Structure formats: C-alpha cells, structure tokens
Image 1 (cartoon, rainbow, N blue to C red):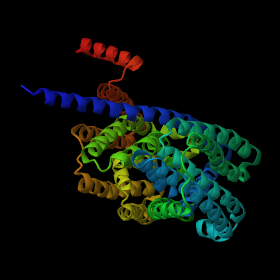
Image 2 (image 1 turned 180 degrees about the vertical axis):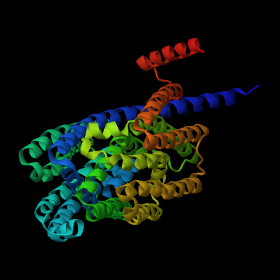
Image 3 (image 1 turned 135 degrees about the vertical axis):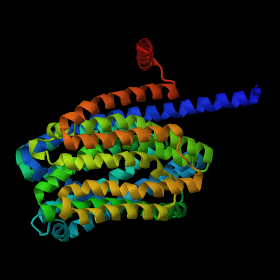
Image 4 (image 1 turned 90 degrees about the horizontal axis):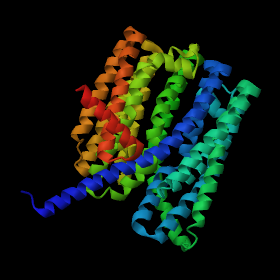
Length: 516
C-alpha cells in the first residue's frame, strides 16, 4: 500500500502533466489558428501568382524572399533569437530592471542594425544580382529589396520582444493583419504589373509586419511605464551580451538560409527557371503545413523551455510533451498531403507544377525526421550554447548543399528532396546527443511509438505513390483520418480537455465500444 505522501506527489505530477499539455494546446491553438488564417491568405496569393506568372514568376518570388531572409539574418546579428531568450529569462528570473535592460538593448540595437543592413545591401545590389542570377539585369529590382532587409530586421526584433514576454494574443493579431494586408495588396500588384509587381509583393510582408509589430510593442511598453530606465553603462553591458549570443544565432541561421539560397542558385543556373519554380512550389507546400507548429514552438515552447532549462526533470518532461504534441498535430497533415500530393500541387498551383510532386515526396519523408528534431533543436538554443548550435547548423547546411550539388546531374531537381532528408539524418542525432549530455534526455515510449508509425506510414505511401497516385490516395486518406482520430483521443486524455471536444470524444468511444 502506498504512503499518502507518495499519492499526493503522484497526483501533483499528474496535474502538472495535464496543465503543461493544456498550455501547449492553448498556445498551439492561438498561434496555430492565426497561422492557419495567414496560410489561407498565402495560398490565395500563391495561386494567383501561379496562374498569372507561371513557374518562372513563382521561382522569382521565392528567390527574392530568400535573398531578403538571408540578408536580414546577416544584418540582424541574431538579435531576434538571442533577444527572445534574454527577454524570457529576464521576465522569469531577473525582475523589472533586467527586463528594461533587455527590452531597450534589443529594440534600439536592432534599429541601428536595420539601417546599416539596408544600406550595405543597397550598395552591393549589383554584385548580389551577378552572384545569384549570373548577370546584373535584375540589379534594379534587387536594389529595392534593401528596404525589405531593413524592415525585416526591425520587425524581427519587435516580434522577438513579444515572444519573450509571451504575448501570444498580440503575436496572433500581427500574423492575421500582416497576412490579410500583404495578400490583398500583393495580388493587386501582380495583377496590374505582372512580373514587375513581384518586388512589391515581396516587400509588402516585411512592411506590414513592421508597422503592426511596432503598434503592439508600443502598446505593451505603455503597460511597463513604471520600470526604471537603466544607466548607459548597464545598457552597454546588456547590449554586449546580446551581441555575443546573437552572433551565434546569426551564423547558424545564416548557414541554413545561405544553403537554401545556394541550392536555389544551383537549380536555376544548372536546370533553368522552370526547375527553380518546381523547387519553390514543393518547398512552399512543405513549409506551409508545418507553419502552425513552427509558430507555436518559437512563440511559446522556446521561452518556456528557457525558463526551466536548468531543471533537468522539468525540461525533460517539457521536451517529451512538446515532441508528442508536435507528432500528434503534424502526422495527420503530413500523411494527408503525402497521400494527395498530385492533387495538392494542382490545387495550390497549376498543372505546370506537377513535376514538383517528386520533390515533395522526398521532402515529406524528410519531415518525419524534422518533426522529431524541432523540439530538440531548441535545447541547444535555450542552453545558450552558441558554438555548438553553429556547428550543428553548419553541418546540416553543408549536407544540404553538398548532396544537391552531387545529385543534380544524376536525378535532376529531385536531388533537393534527397538532400533535405540527408540534412536531418545528420542534424537530428547531433541534437539528441546534446540533449542527452546536458539533460540525460530520452524520448518517452509514446513518442517512439508514434514516430515509428508515422515513418512507416510515410515510407509506404511514397512507395505506393511511385506505382499509382490513386493507390496512395486510397491507402493514405484513411490512414491520415485514423491518425487524426487517435491524436484527438490521446490529446484529450493527457490534457483533460473539456467542452465540445470532450463530448465528441465520449461519443466516439461509445461508438467504438459498440462496434467492439
């Protein structure tokens, strides 16, 4: 017979377990809901661009976006990732003065970096055009992208502050407002100016993000008006710490976005603009369905893990819970897209993009590893181990570029999908080793089981898809629905969900028991 103290401890742990899962689901629902709305706007924008501009225009949009992303990461010195960590730690541990230091060093420092980054990009626009496209004809459009670089750096710091403060509702509002305005104005731009409107379409996202982010950060700061303003010496010291950690974030992020840009450049120069459009279509679809989870991880999980990273037991429990939640939420979507890949590509783009299906198959197989890697990757960041983070990301980026370079002459643009899998074959074990070294981390039984089922299902659907699209759909759609039902039951049990979801689950169990 167990002692009362043991029973109390078990009940407490069970309550904490459910509370943690409820927190994960709540943040995922808020950020995920806003991301879904934003995805809907993006899908409309992509569809219009595909119909009006074709594969060449879609490929150009992706390249311009990647250029802004790469340059803004370099110019921002990693202040967004480091700033989120600093603000989250100050909010949990250090008190109001420390929070004021983190806030001011992040926002003012980023503004200076934004201006400097935009000016440097503007001065180098001719060289960038020649490096990426092989000539300088696109230099005029690329010059305008300097504005997007400056706005992206400034907007990233604002979002980092909101993430560190865990202002999830405001972040959701930024997503929705940005998506709506950028989509409406972007469609008008490409409808009126066709390929000449691509630059306007690409610039609208950083512009609207900056404006809406500035509004919500200013509103949040008004509630903190009583925080004392720190001295210049203290602010300089905080800025130095932010810079040292931020450089590690910047170098690691630059490795990945630089690798993506290198892959785009190789595809465009070796296989042509049509192949680049196929790559962009597959890459966008792969990013879209994961965007809901990526947003929730960066917004809620990362700041929460940073606050408990020195508590091994709490950190291990949180990582396993987040890993299981990511699997349960992503697996049905992954299997569904994989089983209906040809129809998804036709729906979101057009018949011209059907060759992208082969790339998408490989990329979705790689996503089975990426889903497991996502929660583990934040352990290194939360620990503040900048050098290790740089090494892991650089090895992954090198694998992506290297396999693409070797594979393009042999299997064409599908080599990018194979390289995507190889990248996570390298990165996932390294992040797991780091988590095990610092925290003694091991995946729970449920995570291992769900990951095994997902991987086996994905491999089977790809094999069927190579034989017959219809066979993959017939097998994959019921499998996706079954996994979705299991995910709903599992999440309701571990999180003790109530309301309409609970009533639906009770009805499902009753039907299942009667059938049995």
